[in-house]
Image (cartoon, rainbow, N blue to C red):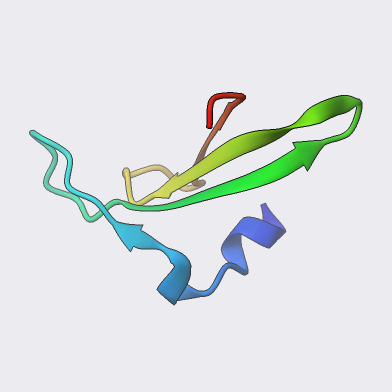
Length: 61
């Protein structure tokens, strides 16, 4: 989580969600996992009303 909070503000892209009045922002990046040989996609979302960002991990690029 420390790394997520240290991502500069300009890297967070504002998105619009239907039926949601907040100001969600996302960072969509590629990264790797230990013991997994392929590159993964990591989508970070903040501004959904939770204390911590939401982290989505997928192998779809």
